[in-house]
Amino acid sequence: MRFPRASGILLHPTSLPGPHGVGGLGPEAYRFADFLATAGVKIWQMLPLGPTGYGDSPYQCFSAFAGNPFLISPEKLVDKGLLEEQELAAKPDFPEDTVDFPRMIAWKLSLFEKAYERFLALPAAHEHRQDDFPWLDDFARFMALKLANRMVVWTRWDPAIHASARDIGFQKFLQYEFFEQWHELRAYCHARGIRLMGDIPIYVAHDSADVWANRSLFDLAPDGEPNYVAGVPPDYFSATGQLWGNPIYRWKAMEETGFQWWVERFRATFDMVDIVRLDHFRGFEAYWRVPGGDKTAVNGQWIKAPGERLFEAVEEALGPLPIVAENLGVITPEVEAMRERFGFPGMSVLQFAFGNDPQGPSFRPHNYPVHRFAYTGTHDNDTTIGWWTSTGPGGSTRSDADLEKERAFCCAYLNTDGKEMNWDFIRAVMASVACTAVAPMQDLLGLGSEARMNLPGEPSGHWRWRCPESAFHPALSRRLRTLIELYDR
Image (cartoon, rainbow, N blue to C red):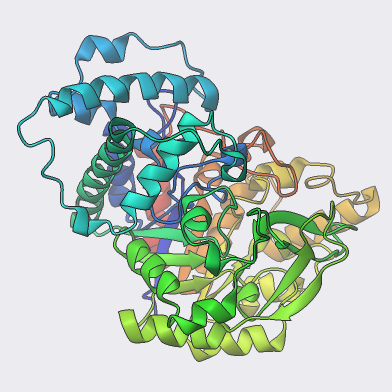
């Protein structure tokens, strides 16, 4: 699939400003959509939208199909008569610049319980259309059982504990509210010429409804623990690789069903968004498999995956796929051949263009192909300003000499003195021939490492950054629009 020339902003909904401890699908989301429309931005890119689990990471969700209930707007529940204004006012004193996940979750759950009690009293309380969500029974039962078992992993649940009908119904209520609000926001964005771009992680969390309800599709031991887990091998960033811990798929069993689970996963995602970034694309050609009990990824091995047959099945079921392949890292010719066969654009990250990355030349704008999504940085990078002023990204041991060489090359390449390196980066990807140029919101705001979203390899303490209330300023919109018009985006 070919993509028209456009620009995008990466901002996960949890990072939106607002009074409820976390961004969501309420007024703050509509303000951001208006900001994008005024600037002429055509794509709002987000991270995975599922209910987060371990480490509050959107890449470790309790479901690959469900929505994150903590994005539900309390204001919209007030509009429906399910909450009262004074109940929203009686909130904790949340920080404005970060998400305090434990306090936010406890407070929002208390609000949602009140909303659910009022919902149950309505005449139409049981008229939801179950057929819209074929995955919902399994997910609602999983979450109800998980809460009843004090949130421990499902392999340690007490078999004597059962989920009540009320608790299962509560989980379903949250999903219906999430998707109703989501589709209202999506329609609002579409009316303003904005497409939504989502994200599909290649793997799902072990502690998820997906694995619990479909154990035959995952490589598990009889006790439910993974025989093997996912990761990536050692490289010049990490001597021990990255151990992600996700269970490995039983690809043969999936293929015997015509990859039905994957077809439905893609179908559900494209019902929410218009474009999908497919995370760790190289794992669909071959994946790094690590024994389940290992503490590092060193002892893994590459195993072939049925990537082409999978995409053939999904394409046959759903038609042309508006997918962007995350082809970063060590990418083989086989991976690139698969990407090109299906017409998926790859990614280039400008922040990797000036150092010792072996792929550095391909990240420089003069080498971009047209069929490419070009980024100043991603959720896994430091912000541009943080990178520019740092002594080394995320545990790196770059020498002072390497830093000076990298900075000198960057300034020479971009013809800049570095005083506004974030805007130099934005201009460079905008001016390139790449079909789509994307910048994280942090780069528009010129924020440093304090605004970084994630640091790969660290299991917790991330995903918490939030925009300031003043972020969507008309002057910023005008500056962005100038570049968008200048470079036909």
